Image (cartoon, rainbow over all chains, first blue to last red; front, side, top):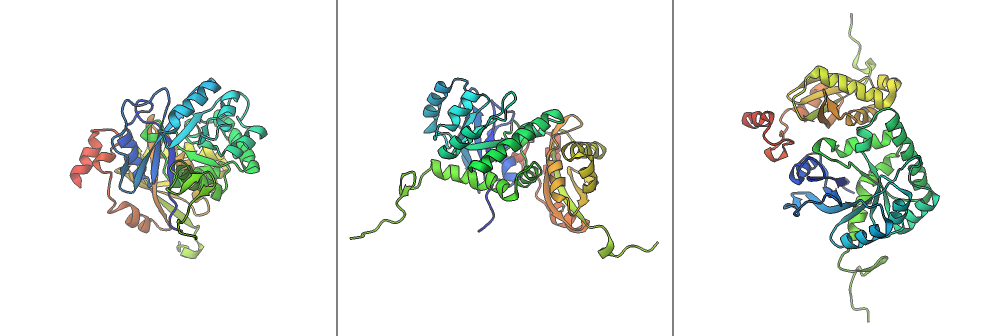
Amino acid sequence: MGKPKFYDFCVHAIPDGDNTVEQLAALARHFRYSGIALANHSDKLPQSRPLITSLEGFEIFRGIELVEENPSKLHGLIGKYRKSVDVLIVHGGSEAVNRAALENPRVDILNHPAFDKSSGLNQVLAKAAAENDVAIGLTLRPFLHSRGSRRIRLLSDLRANLDLARKYDVSLVLSSDAMSCFDLRSPMETLALAEVCGLEEDEALEAISTAPEKILSRNSPGPGYIREGVEVLEEGDYF
Amino acid sequence: MKRLLPSLRAKKRYLAFELISEEPVSRSDLVREVMSSASSLLGDVTASECDIKVLGFEDRKGIIQCSHKKVKETRASLAALTRVNGRRATLYILGTSGTVKRATEKFIQNRTAFEPENKVKPGTSEECRQNKTQ
């Protein structure tokens, strides 16, 4: 096995964030990421598609972070954007939205599930997430930009979600949720931060490299793909 | 006083780093931010075990010393740094080594600096100066 590939699956460019796609991509590449997914919030989509999609040894994936309060409208948006993006993220934050996202197998990641006094997940939702293969997004930006009581709150929510994820075998995805270049952190730093915050070394590594790869391969099936779980690996004349 | 044998000295790791910031920052500002971010993330007790010291910092690159058992914690606390002197900044660790000499040779000298398209803010004087000296 070679070096693991690292991905950052939630980066916001202009007009959502502060920097252009090119700047973010250049910095991410400098930090030795293998790819980023541009996931602007659905209410702030760029006018045109980015010109570059891949630099040497670096890929930029199309993503979107859906922001919608109404679950039935959310399902509509998922259907609308699913075909055109590689990574579909839902911006959680209420019981109804979290539930809608985790029960829809076409969603890849649920970000920011926490609300009021809850960590956002419970046993029922964690089970649904595992069944539908929706990952829980762990985002760095809130951790970096808060201190004291707010960060303590975020960490305890993270611990609660982590326990549920371990119990029900829900996959996790680490991302920066960067609004500008200065929110990006290199993979090694992200891993160290995740480990200090309570993840195990292999969990953190999976969350930044294997889990994103899995999402990508699921959304761009190979030529022999028939349906989930059924794939033609080798064609031949068997008779 | 006779110097301690290398095998008897406390073991250290040296982290070579690059600071990407909106505006040039001074060493003393950086030291203050590193310490405050470490104590806020890890708490004063663990931060003291890390034994973090900023050894040198010039031209946006420098070396930080830490205990060899606490490299992970140190990395995490450096990653948690978001602002220096009120200006946004991010600290990127180029590599770790057991000696200052090796860290400097391997990671700081002869390192290709930011290419023009890697600019964080277009047209900052810092970048132009750096490109000219290349």
